[in-house]
Every structure is written in C-alpha cells, then in structure tokens.
Amino acid sequence: MDKVSGKLTVFFEEPFWVGVFERIGDGKLSVAKVSFGAEPKDYEVYEFIVKHYCSLRFSPAVAAVVKVTKKNPKRMQRDVKKQLQDTGIGTKSQQALKLQQEQNKQVRKLKSREQKSAEAKRLFELKQQKKKDKHRGH
Image 1 (cartoon, rainbow, N blue to C red):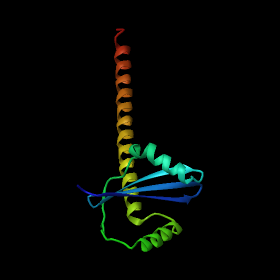
Image 2: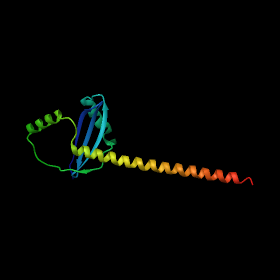
Image 3: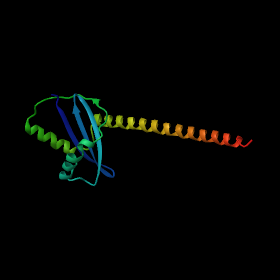
C-alpha cells in the first residue's frame, strides 16, 4: 500500500489568509488553494479540513522527489518551528497551482469559443430565415 502525505500551509496574502494543501502520493505532488478571509483559528482550520477536504479541487499531479527518512523528535520540532516562521509556499506547489490555472484557462477559452460560434451560427440562421420570409410573399 502506498503512503500518502499531506501538508497545510496557512499564510497572509493581501488582503486574505490563504491555505495551501499539498498532497504527495506515488511520488507526485498535487496542490489545492483555499482563501479563508479573516485569520483562521486552529479549531476553524481543523473543522474546515474535516468538512471540506474531500471537496477540494487539487491541481494535476507534478513529479516530486519524496525522501523517506526517520528524524529525531527534537529535530522534527525544530523543523516545524522553522516552517511556522517561514511564509509563502514551496516552488513545487506554485508550479502545481500554475498548472491548474492554465488548465482552467484553456477550458474557459474553449467554452467561450464554442458559445461564440454557436451564437454566430444562430444569428446566421436567423438572417437566412428572414431572407426566406421576405421572398415568400411573391
């Protein structure tokens, strides 16, 4: 059975507090971004994870290097403290979010292009029908 690990980074990005969920499984990283608005309390973040984690839209998976090492508990505490002091998100996460944005952009473009062509076709058909109606009187 494969191991899946997750990480949540909450930081302030003018004017909102943002949470970035990173999920690593099968050596691939996928990311989801959530805006919290006001600074969330710990229990609010926990409640959000419990209620809404399954409905998060994660980005397409990006290859990531996964290191599996056992750490000293004190070292882990230091690392957690260091991560809490750091602000921002990892570059891999940014790449995954950017990839998701690009895909959404392509889908939007395709939909709007189809809508425009359908509207143009409808207008053309309407003009043709009007032309036919004008000539029927003779």
